[in-house]
Length: 416
Image 1 (cartoon, one colour):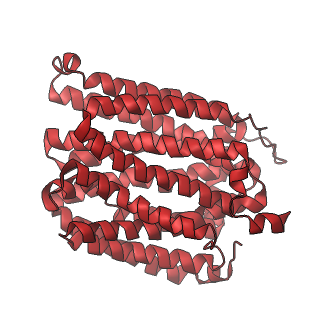
Image 2 (image 1 turned 90 degrees about the vertical axis):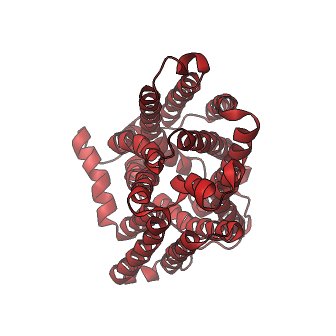
Image 3 (image 1 turned 60 degrees about the vertical axis):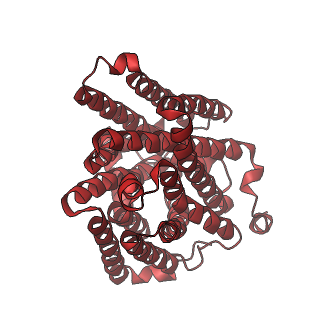
């Protein structure tokens, strides 16, 4: 059976529940990115302040960081499907409120300060829901496929996620130009309802039972951290992604590049946002046949190094096509590290700790997208857009060098 799985690069896709799961991942990624891109562009047009773009990330990150570890605790002890459904309902509610805030009849009675406060409040609500949704989703995935398909399922899951990350931003720019922000949000709400339906098609999974004595909440949360910090390959994999995204990410301030540096407008912004995911998707298509898990740690370090170099070149570019190419390369390199990290996170944690380990990962990696967005907006305001992005690429390379000196024993680890 293992040999059959090894020879079948589509093995995970032959499992119906895994198909529902990754279709949900694709659609929720598309919808939230449409919302994020159009909202970011609308905010930049309203304020012409890159810091406002950074605050979008911070508003989601604060509740996500505060609650995701508790969300992981719940995911290990409660029905994961129910957590996903309730979280989706909250996200749908947030999108409905955003739609209402931008209606002329409502906006006319609100000052710009009040509107901005309401928008950021809604983003905090969505971040709260993600704090429960993310660990439940990550910890459910290993229960949908056999263990020998973990690497294969991680590749397909990431491929569908990246496909959503291509379609979402690419469609968002055109939607904004053609139908406007309000109608884009209507589409977001409709697609979120489809996501809710897809989760209902997945059977409820039994809650894993641990042989360890019952723990209180505080001890349970500490256990997740202890596992991560004592398992070096998990710790360093999370750390590399954390710092590369935190300092090297440029996604949040792409509206500034589109509007003021490359002068390509909303449609160009859609292409810029889609470019990293196009690079990632092409690379992941290759990795379904040639997974990067044999010399996993070497490949991880090389990928993050390439990410940093491509980020620096993007920062210095004033040519739209060179900028697209460099963004595509950041996605390609990032996809290699994502596959390796996801495989590590599926193989090493025991079943009864997957939710908490996924939550720790989410706190330090997933939230780094939002914290990185704030860092990007703040540094762009203080240092200027180009210097801030170039500096982020340099810091990424320094982090890789440091981790390399501390983790040489991991070069012997093979995940395949």
